[in-house]
Image (cartoon, rainbow over all chains, first blue to last red; front, side):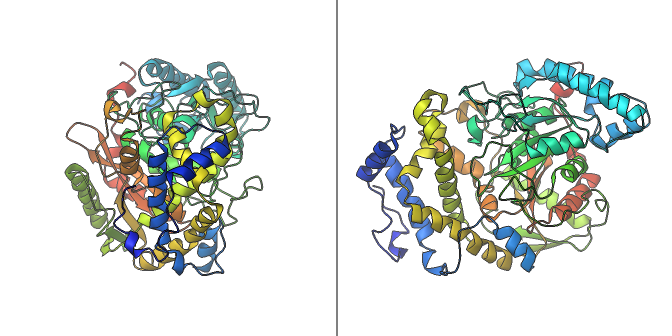
Length: 77
Length: 473
């Protein structure tokens, strides 16, 4: 798997790396044949997760997943 | 008089009110153009000639009785083929078997009530996935300025039909640039409203957390006229915002002097084609001449936001499509399947983290950008209009690169939920349109439209049209 240059900044090394075997298992569970190579899917996902993971520690516990963020901030403005 | 199908909505509405033209004549002219150009650009997947003319006759009768419904009364429009119309199946840009909806989309019902007349359904990327706009299932929609170039997508037909004067305005959807990219590459004006500003009810979803719906037209004022009919809360859309809706036209002529325009010193200014940079700089000078204050501003790193947005789209779209992907795999493009497959290996907590990250990023962006400026000024795409040949990849080898290049300046704005107005700012040396986007605070569409209208009052880029738009082609 391609080594990402930002991985050393990851506060939880290894926690967000997806493996090829995990991808194959997940596709099997979904009942779908992979179009892309499982190794490519794993590399792409690991990249995405690592990018986001850099910011995880800064998300407070009281932030909920929601769609209405813009409405909330417009009301506060 | 200008060809009927080449007028703006505002001018056509005035001509109808003065009884200089009839709705039947107006709709007939647009239908004739749609039928003439469709074998060339493939913007329409369906042209509703009989139905549209029947509605035009009714519109003329109502007008004769003094029962005019407003500025859109009798105006021919067309919609991306994922807006449900009761009794008519939508193709979603695919060959999969879709059900026939019992109820029309809220947006279509609102435009019906405002008097607009649907003349057909428009081509699009399959299931609204694909910023190139290309479609190997129902045939590519081609750019009216040069049919060897892409239209941009996913609302390909929505951009092309307006550019070629085969509709006064169209509707598109925008989850990662799907209104702004076709507006930019086809040289028309398009608005991606704030998340929640326009109802998505009755429109095929792609990503319920990021989807927005917006109009494309030949001027900012026409976009404002359509927005007046579209905007507002809807009980049928759980993401609909309960925020007051202004009259987008009433204050459109007010001066923009003193408005603070933010010019990004990073991210949106990186990797630009020299011709894009030149046109963007020139558009900034116009805004400066209009009395706007130009302020350089550093943009927060949006790479994490973009990664989170891509993850959300794949998770939500795969949830919607996985059953049909199992049953009708061949109905799905390689491009679509590849982007959805990542979702099956994404843990649910990671998806929810991406959604939690959304409000954190929005707060950061508002604080670091919109406390310093009123509007952010940026290109829609860093590159010139790609060719069909270089974009038409089903192998997947260059898919991420092409998608990444086209959505780079767009998808993060969807993640933040902010409104953005795309409008023409010039032409490249190979005669293709170039565009800027004006990005605003949540629900600041009125401000963006005012600024865009001021720009179009000072320039005539939006009045240029391709040779295919001429009636004597």
